[in-house]
Picture 1 (tube, rainbow, N blue to C red):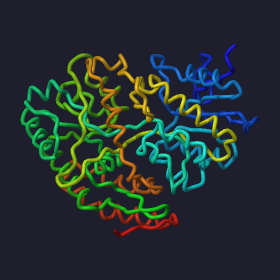
Picture 2 (picture 1 turned 180 degrees about the vertical axis):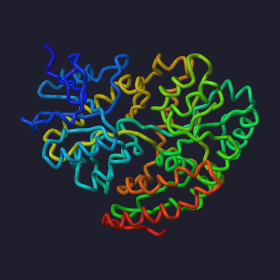
Picture 3 (picture 1 turned 90 degrees about the vertical axis):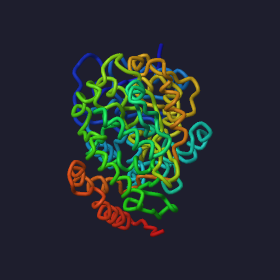
Picture 4 (picture 1 turned 135 degrees about the vertical axis):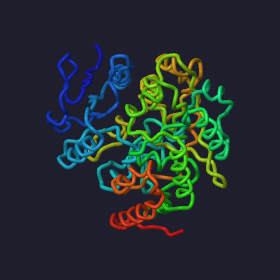
Length: 429
């Protein structure tokens, strides 16, 4: 008989009934030291590999663990708020999937359990870049789930017809965009509301927004020359119709399906949406790295990745981390969802569901190679939420004559003030 595993969607057991909000179902405090309650926000479509099978396999190998896995259906903000409340009330799950951008804040606010001693055994499997996403002030709070490197996806057929090649430097990128625009094509969309996209783009092109100097000191680069140059150039590309400003996939769906947009600066998790927008079997998409700005070092940044974190009060951190690592060792669970496992897995394959988009291209292998190069010297910092909130009014400026870069000094000032208010320090170097 299989060990007992409760797989729950939004707090309701999968028995055919419609799911409701998790917040309406109170959870009792863990009743035994080997209980591992896990919350996640991965899609649960019937055509996707099941987390249930991964859970059963983990329990088969660890029969003393009482594992329960819950899929949460809520917005990111609601989900994080529920996590915070659950910790305060002593009802938190043992482990939860959270945006990597939120780890530093959760750790700074005391929401997470220090699991440095248990995570040490996994350091040879996970590269320093992904592992840095679950670390704060020299302590480790979980394991990275996926790498999510920011890359350039491009329609190789359309690019070949325009006689342009994947860029190896910023000058070539601008030249390719100019040539494509002369043919009525855009090199990519630009998600105007996504602060993280601009931050990751800045990092990738050589100018990270936040760099930790030591455990309590941060250098803020939001208003650096590199970020100002990048922002100005992106806005020039919007003006020249080389980039299409978007508000989510639905807003640019027709532009992708018609072939007006022939590239996408984004992350692996965008692949299912890209496939839906492009349509079946029309073109052959490939992966290229994003070149740095002239005079800057080449970097790979992570954008919209997720991490597994151990919540304060968890009584089975070792077992929880073991399940997180077991999921990483089941690459199909993640790659079927357009996610690239953070561990150094050798047997990952591109899902058949993406074949109409990428053909026989080993896009998962390419993305895994890029993900292993993610740097460990940049971070979103524990005041990321304040930065996102402050940037929202500027998002509407991309398609106007008002310079977006003019808002950067104010944003940097907000970040520095928020760091000081959080009891941290700012380096002026």
